[in-house]
Image 1: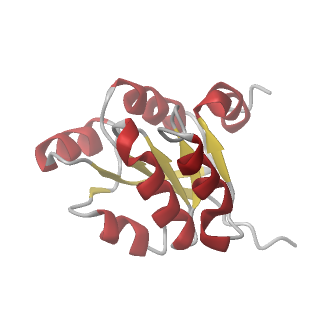
Image 2 (image 1 turned 90 degrees about the horizontal axis):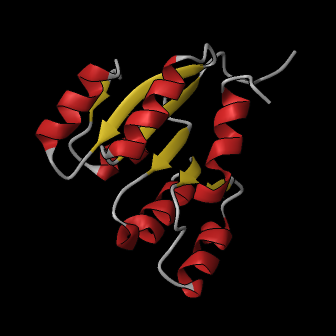
Image 3 (image 1 turned 180 degrees about the horizontal axis):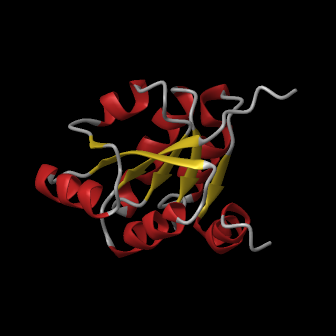
Length: 139
């Protein structure tokens, strides 16, 4: 018997074009739960959540990271925010997928890689196609 959840809870940070693509991919996978979305623009988050059938739009990053039903955070926000959001997500015990670039410089990439000592994992945007294929059962 495994302690793996029946479905992994996902949150998407950012509501741009790539986020729409990822959300569409997630909708095709049985083992995912589309829990929430956050955007700097609350109306965009609400619209995105409704369009892609996420359970809710979050008002704050802190609420996203505090939600126990979220296992994985996908970060597709402006590049300058990737490191801060990835590190906070890892420190909150979430698995993290960061759209490229992982950070704006080598120091940010190293900080994310160490993740505040987190045992959780992260991937960067160069792996997104591979991850999409695996999540969708194509690999």
